[in-house]
Image (cartoon, rainbow, N blue to C red):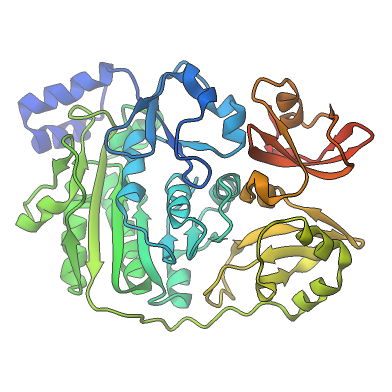
Length: 455
């Protein structure tokens, strides 16, 4: 493995000559793969995953290593949203950010959604997950992963941190910044990241990271927590950035992060308190390179200038639509009628509580997409199917994992069923919803979302 010369010099200086050799040797080690369970859907490893020989990630309570010769993204449980595939070290920031029921949480650089899906699962359907990525194409993947996980209390935007800060000052209880970085910690995992690195990478990303930190700080309530993370080794993007931030934001201070024996302390060039930061080195533990810093904003109580969100008056029309109201009667869940919103082309959304005015932002999703009214006919969404539990809907077709109809359904094919009663059915695998289908005369017309189908 031929590393960039300047990077090699930097790492030798950072680690010292002897440890640098151990770092180089880890490039010969087997790459590590991680799977993280979805807390919203399961607390234990489903029995259908025994073949993957999962091994617990010791510092992540719902994380597991798996071998690189298996394909968990091709398993029906993946399509049911039971887990997310994520590099083990990258699971750490969201895991170590303390989320309380009812929190308003911002993931400001979120795509493709690895950290957002964990934050949303930790909220457990309470509060608000506000997840953003400035890249619209990357935010599309973020949207899919949020919906696949069954997270209904999320707002997904694709905008700049500056625009968000203009609308959401002092709004959030917790903020996570998984900052764009030079990616040095991922060189072992992805040689393309290494090839993109150049001698100016650290300086360029450092400037961007400082901008994001400043905007994020303004959106955090007094007493709130901010988790900053990167997947790089450079002090400039890590401890030095945090030192600059605290110098310019004296209302913030560093907190300890729940430890693990493999974690390394932050470097103390900028002061002894920076030992509270966490570094993950691939030659010291089973993970790629990562950095974490947890900060708290001083003060207590709320400080928000954000105006309240107002649902469209057109939502009142929903109460008159018998197709929609009859469908809701089939769901064993209490809905607040004031939180429904009817948008363009008959799309119905269920808005999270306590939302701020979002006008002027590039919004991809506001709350849970319930479905569409088409010529007085209501069609529920894929997102709603993933958000439901099996026992919340009256009519289900629950297939066993080994049933060949599971794959046929995921491929968008028609399947046979002897389930009693025609009409709209929630198709499940081992009790976990996959999507919708319409049963008639023993044949299920497939309504599984086309863009999600098994390829």
